[in-house]
Structure formats: C-alpha cells, structure tokens
Amino acid sequence: MLELRHITQHYAQQMLLQKLSLQVSAGEIVAILGPSGSGKSTLLKIVAGLQKADAGSVWLAQQDITCLPPERRGFALMFQDFALFPHLNVQDNVAFGLLEQGQSKRQAREHAQQFLGIFGLTGLSQRRVWHLSGGEQQRVALARALITQPRVLLLDEPFSALDAELRVSLRDEFRHRIQSAGLPTLLVTHDALEARAMADRCVRLSQGRLEPISD
Image (cartoon, rainbow, N blue to C red; front, side):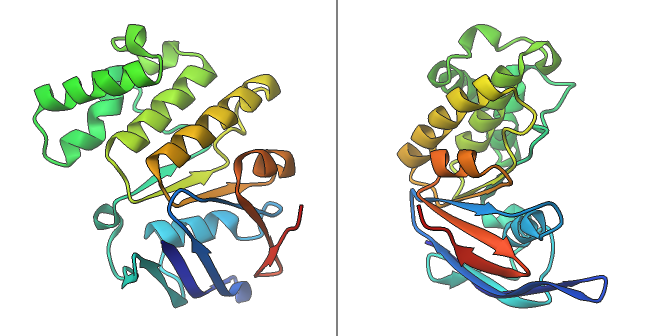
C-alpha cells in the first residue's frame, strides 16, 4: 500500500498543499482531479521523490520512504509528453530501465522483446520513436514503465496529448494492465470523464485539500 501522511507544501508564500493524507492499495487506481495550478503535479513529484515537501511523509508497505531518493523508490512516473528517448529505437527505449538496474544489454533487449510482444509492438522494435503514432508512443512508454516491475505507478496527464478516440481505447487498456500488475497507481488529470473511466476512486484537490468525489 502507498500512503501519504499530512503532506504540506508552500509555494510563493501561499499554502499549496495542506496536510494531505491518502492511501492507495495494491492494484488500485486513484485519480486526483483539479484545475491547473491546484498542486496536482507538485503532489506527484513529492510522491516520486523529485521534490521535497515542507512537511509530511510518504510510506510504502508500512515503511517510511520519505528520505529515499527517486532512484531508490522503485516508482515509475509517466508524463503527458511520453518522455521517450528520441536517439533510441523502440526496443532500447523499453530496455533502458533494465540496463539502469544492471542487466546486460543482451538480457535487457530479450526482455524488452517479450514486453513488446505483450503490447502488440513487436514489429516496431527497430523503429525510432518519432516515427510512431501517438498511441504507439504511449504503449512504448507504458511498456518501459512496467518492465522494471515498479512498486508504484504515477501518471501525470498521460493522455492529454492524444485525440479523443485514442484516449478512450488506451485508457481501457492501461486500466487492465495496471490492475493485472497489481500496482498502487496515482493518476493526475483535469478530465473528469477520464478519471471515472480509469480510476477505482476519485478525489479532488481543491484549496490545498483532497475531497472525495462520489459517483
């Protein structure tokens, strides 16, 4: 279980996040809704360890990981721009995290090929990522995130760059794969329809506090 305890953050001498607490179970997707500037992405960065909160703590499996650097948390973070490496082909983009974990290039590429097959991308393994469609790039990004067997998945507006039809098809696929992997997942979005379609539970970040959203 991922747990946030009393997360507090100031910005420009204003209270951005006010003692936020949240629990996310294994395999559960929790969507955080809110307008631009409400602190959604800031909260995600704090969870990932990319930004230090003014107060509060982050726990995983009943262990306090607040002081762990990002590379030791074992979290996967997906951004709205996919953040793929343009100088690498599809296979090596997916294999990148395994190389960082110390696998040999041969082992990492073999594992990447298996994942590309799962995601229906086998025939694209040698292509550069800029030759892919938006949906294909997003599948590559998800494959790269999941191949390292992360402990938590953090999604920051993952479909905002895609057209409406593609967003609908991909969010169903993402939900299935995330639940199959059993990952606690935080989804940051401003799209209420997307949140309801993907998430098991939705909360709204408003005036620095999290409020439950009923169906």
